Amino acid sequence: MDYKKVISCRCCGSNNLVKYLDLGEVPLANNFNSSKSYPIEVLLCMDCSLSMLSIVVNPLILYSSYPYHSSVSETFKNHCGEMAKTIKDILGTPNPLVCDIAANDGCLLEQFRKEGFYTLGVEPAENLANECEKKNLGVIHGFWDSESSKRIAACDVITATNVFAHVDDIKTFVNLAKDKLRCFHKGIMVIEVPYLDNLLNYVQFDTIYHEHLSYFLFKPLDVLFKSLGIPIFRVEKIPIHGGSLRIYACPYERPIEDSVEHLLMEEENSNLWNLNTYKDFSENIEFIREDLPFLLYSLNEEGKKVMGYGASAKGISLLNYCEIDNEVIHSIVDETPDKQGKRTPGSDIPIVPFDAFEKEKPDFILLLAWNFKDELIKKTKHLGAKYIVPIPQVEIL
Ligand code: DWN
Image (cartoon, rainbow, N blue to C red; front, top):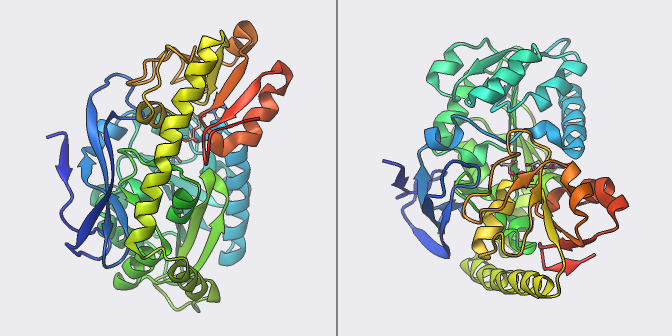
């Protein structure tokens, strides 16, 4: 079976789930070998306010080989450097051991190593585990499960950036990590997830795709970690990937900081635990679904050449949601070697290396990785093209 249906909330177990968004059937964003489509529907848990997809696609289909390399972005590398320094300060232990779950190409672990950490990654995609291996970061090839966790020593810190939203059984995920945190040094778990508040306010509906099973507010995370005996003691809002949350949790005695209560109050006051907020969001999506194709078809009629920048998962989803294809987008530049030479699933647009910009001289560049807008503009300014930013509303720069 390719996928299973969700029947209860993965944070609190409630069956009181209400569907608030249906984006139809689209292909898997990072699967360049197939355009097979699967439904995208989002449910809200009426008890803890977790948003989640109505289905879970078999992770072996999604992650056995994975084209996304975190290290392509300088912005992300800098972000990882800051994260490693912050965690080093919190721990205050000499030469701590960090384990990074879903280590990707080792982007974060390299920064930890610079800060004097011993490093170990767990990574299910063979191509990415090989990258970590080449960098001598220490890696276990596999998912984070009872098998792989048995193979690691007790850690001072376990990190999981941009993977928690991809996991179905998050209780087992957290419990396995909790059991590996060193008691003596009060080991901690640090997780980063895209923040649903940003998704709603900035209409980031393109970040809704099959890999992202959960869309987190702070409340469901707080509920989950408390219930598992590893309370969150600090939460921070961070700008990466269009706005994310970084949570710090520890199963040993650590004072709970004010940030926890403050964010819960803020969410409640902003009506984020209220179904009506989600209904408004669904309506805002329709503006982008109308405006973006309208603009691209108008430019096409005027004879303008439009290229995309960043064959990101969100970009591929956006093109499918807006029914945009190779009729109006000439090609998409992406600096990830594993994506070049492929065509985008569904929209069937060629993915090309950076020098295609110089050859093709586009009139417009559609920023499909709008989360790295500044970095992408800096690298292409010399081309003299105009930019189309699709999110939070369609805009020309
Ligand atoms: O959670 C996830 C996030 C964190 O990463 C995953 N499910 C998959 C992935 O999502 P994405 O593909 O939407 O992420 P990005 O980081 O927005 O993708 C950016 C794309 O643009 C990558 O394919 C790399 C490319 N890029 C480039 O070619 N040159 C990016 C930058 C910054 C560049 O300078």
